[in-house]
Image (cartoon, rainbow, N blue to C red; front, top):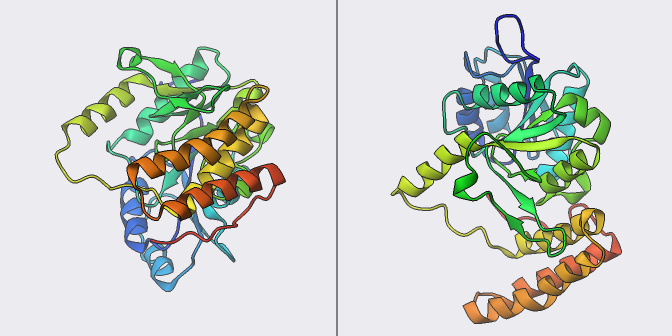
Length: 309
């Protein structure tokens, strides 16, 4: 519901996970902890505490309360988000929201957080059981494990999806998170956002993206003439992608769908590596096979050490 002044209802509590990016952390703080950003508080979860990152937080001049949580070890994005969400749950009301932020991906629009908050509040005012909203997301084919983003002709109003993609201002209902749980820290990296949103939907909540904001985001991407960010393919990413997608499909897919995804990771992807002459092909393929095996064994957590930044 909305207040008598028409402002979006509930407060927005940010969760920002950082890992060896003090410069990115400083930029994020300048963008999201400034007057009018839309945040009421911010929890910073540092997966690699350092003097540089601590100095960034200590010298920041935010207008919102900041809690700095230094993790004893790298628990990955999934573990960091889970820890931050748990901290928010200690202070937030059911009508509040929690916003997941990346240390290297500030909002593209100055009032992006305000827009997402207003979008979520408008849906609640219409009587919808909103679990989470964001800018961009996709729908999951529960037979094949493939993800499909909304088509251009759908980009208006509220678009029902299965999850909000990482770095796309995932704003989750505190009420829904209290009922369905925070991110699964055991996934460590990759598809934890998909698992989280599917759990919200299994709990009776809906997940939406804002068609207007998604349309503008696609227009920016198409008009950009700058250099791309490059491929994010790596051996350790391949491992976690294979393992976690199979885990998600075992939890939420159709009968036999996890076996289909396993076949893709063990057979189809190595063939694609061979065709593309991706180097080191054997290491990529081996990582996918290892991830598939661990998914069925139930071996979760941080198994393969991430490299960089």
